[in-house]
Length: 71
Image 1: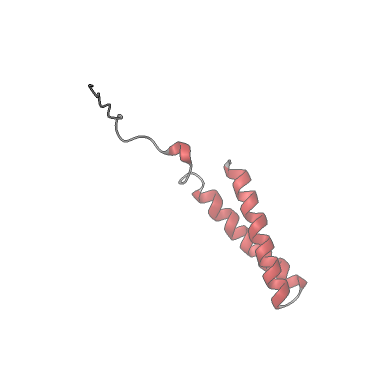
Image 2: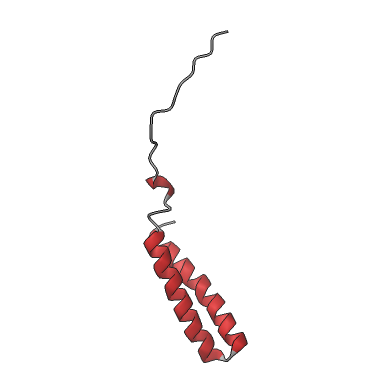
Protein backbone atom coordinates (compact mmCIF):
# COMPACT_ATOMS: atom_id res chain seq x y z
CA UNK A 1 0.00 0.00 0.00
CA UNK A 2 1.45 3.36 -0.95
CA UNK A 3 1.74 6.37 1.35
CA UNK A 4 -1.32 8.23 0.12
CA UNK A 5 -3.64 5.25 0.30
CA UNK A 6 -2.36 4.34 3.76
CA UNK A 7 -2.87 7.90 5.02
CA UNK A 8 -6.39 8.06 3.57
CA UNK A 9 -7.33 4.72 5.12
CA UNK A 10 -5.95 5.77 8.50
CA UNK A 11 -7.82 9.07 8.30
CA UNK A 12 -11.09 7.26 7.58
CA UNK A 13 -10.66 4.75 10.40
CA UNK A 14 -9.58 7.36 12.95
CA UNK A 15 -12.34 9.74 11.86
CA UNK A 16 -14.92 7.01 12.38
CA UNK A 17 -13.58 6.19 15.85
CA UNK A 18 -13.47 9.87 16.86
CA UNK A 19 -16.92 10.55 15.43
CA UNK A 20 -18.51 7.63 17.27
CA UNK A 21 -16.84 8.54 20.57
CA UNK A 22 -17.76 12.22 20.25
CA UNK A 23 -21.30 11.37 19.24
CA UNK A 24 -21.76 9.02 22.19
CA UNK A 25 -20.29 11.46 24.70
CA UNK A 26 -21.91 14.69 23.47
CA UNK A 27 -23.52 15.57 20.13
CA UNK A 28 -22.96 15.47 16.37
CA UNK A 29 -20.74 18.56 16.22
CA UNK A 30 -18.45 17.16 18.89
CA UNK A 31 -18.27 13.90 16.96
CA UNK A 32 -17.28 15.68 13.76
CA UNK A 33 -14.63 17.76 15.53
CA UNK A 34 -13.18 14.74 17.33
CA UNK A 35 -13.25 12.73 14.10
CA UNK A 36 -11.40 15.41 12.14
CA UNK A 37 -8.76 15.78 14.85
CA UNK A 38 -8.18 12.04 15.29
CA UNK A 39 -8.30 11.46 11.55
CA UNK A 40 -5.74 14.17 10.86
CA UNK A 41 -3.39 12.95 13.57
CA UNK A 42 -3.63 9.38 12.29
CA UNK A 43 -3.11 10.38 8.66
CA UNK A 44 -0.09 12.55 9.46
CA UNK A 45 1.47 9.81 11.59
CA UNK A 46 0.84 7.26 8.85
CA UNK A 47 2.33 9.56 6.21
CA UNK A 48 5.46 10.23 8.29
CA UNK A 49 6.04 6.59 9.27
CA UNK A 50 5.19 4.98 5.92
CA UNK A 51 8.79 4.78 4.72
CA UNK A 52 10.13 3.41 7.99
CA UNK A 53 7.96 0.31 7.90
CA UNK A 54 8.07 -0.31 4.15
CA UNK A 55 9.02 -3.96 3.59
CA UNK A 56 10.94 -3.17 0.40
CA UNK A 57 13.24 -0.76 2.23
CA UNK A 58 15.01 -3.52 4.18
CA UNK A 59 18.28 -4.56 2.59
CA UNK A 60 20.15 -7.71 3.59
CA UNK A 61 23.18 -7.06 5.78
CA UNK A 62 25.35 -9.78 4.23
CA UNK A 63 25.36 -12.41 1.53
CA UNK A 64 23.53 -15.63 2.39
CA UNK A 65 25.68 -18.51 3.63
CA UNK A 66 25.66 -21.65 1.51
CA UNK A 67 26.44 -24.94 3.20
CA UNK A 68 27.36 -27.98 1.12
CA UNK A 69 26.30 -31.33 2.52
CA UNK A 70 28.24 -34.37 1.34
CA UNK A 71 26.60 -37.76 1.61
